Length: 191
Ligand SMILES: NC(=O)c1ccc[n+]([C@@H]2O[C@H](COP(=O)([O-])OP(=O)(O)OC[C@H]3O[C@@H](n4cnc5c(N)ncnc54)[C@H](OP(=O)(O)O)[C@@H]3O)[C@@H](O)[C@H]2O)c1
Image (cartoon, rainbow, N blue to C red):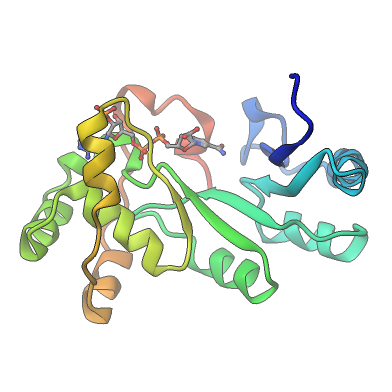
């Protein structure tokens, strides 16, 4: 890659992506072996931070019990209506930074009436509400956009969602249909 070091490298999934959250085999040994390779690269300074993604509580527990260095980050699907609160609390209480991917529900939040109503209440766009929601869960938020205007708006989130409305948003009916992207295993899984 022609780089002296990489900021961060993560294990994408505890299981082969095709069977993520669809098989009972959690590949504990395989994850520890991959983790040893990341740990070596971290110790030699090639990686500045190492972490995991799509790891459930039991997968994290395996690392905490058996690995030399604990994961620094767990990157998980987290958006309004689909918030793995127990997992977030479990990881954060153990010093693991939580990252939220697909914070706008891969675009599906834009179509959700309840989320739109809450965004109107605060005078913000749906993506702004979604990004602010994940930030207020103390998560690093990873929105994606190909539109520079959307990118600027998504960074302009200097408002605060009340505790009561955070509770409402945590309990909004789960978005189950991710439209044409529903075939991705992670959009139909346990996270
Ligand atoms: N670790 C994992 O397993 C995993 C899995 C999935 C995704 N990810 C990562 O998570 C990141 C984001 O995920 P994502 O693409 O699934 O979903 P996302 O950020 O929830 O949603 C992206 C969609 O929202 C739209 N959008 C964003 N801001 C907008 C705005 N201000 N106004 C209108 N539309 C807006 C985008 O369209 P426009 O381009 O038109 O703005 C795009 O269609 C990516 O970097 C991806 O690599 C990680």
